[in-house]
Image 1: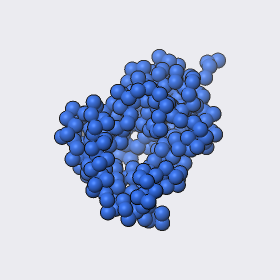
Image 2: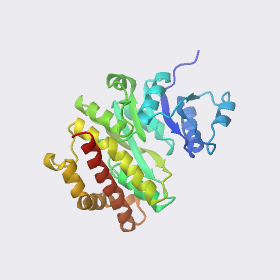
Image 3: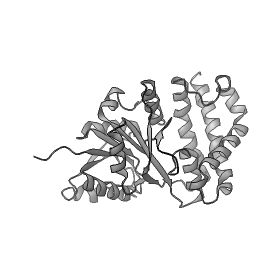
Image 4: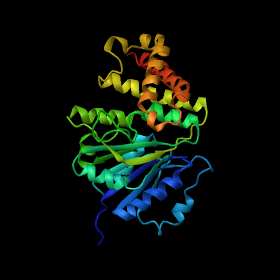
Length: 300
């Protein structure tokens, strides 16, 4: 009888055109280091099909595909995958994040010591919009960061042990976005800080190649993030400033300051930091305006 896998790579999926590349990289590492890969989600278009993977299921015994009957939010999909996982270590990535060599092994080694870990996000450079989107979201998770405890990580590249995941009751399924931020804040309330492992990298290639897509992503991110910050008493700004009115009226200067800090922080991962400043500014401004709107609609 075969023993349980050492780790489970969990990938939430919804029409992601890079899923083949992600699965191949994840399966290669699962085979090398005795893991399994669990893909959970559905296809809404014909642009990406999982049928070839299903037809070759006998060739990929390390792969489990869980089909859903409707689109699941990422946190819900991950929780469902955990129910099917056979290991004690869960490695989360997105379906547009390609694991780099040594990724799984590095996260697993860190999980032997720390219950919650995260790795670096390498920026895909298919377009300036993609770079700007990555910089805005992951400026503090670049490979040049030092290893050690950190305030936050992201589920695009995260590892957690089963014991802690169950103690936290998994991801909050009421959240469509920022569910990973919420889980990390709940862990911190238990006195557990994330541990950053820069050598455990993923190459992130989001399909955002125009300004509208860049701003839409920022707005989606803001809807959940602002509410989680309020609920968990983790303000982005000093208390009196973290209000809908102030964030709305100061959106432009706040966004400019945030964009400048973002580009400076991520400068080593950007081929022309100053040239991307305007795009990052627009992303940040969309975030502040949406955060103000979401807080106002929630009566906060």
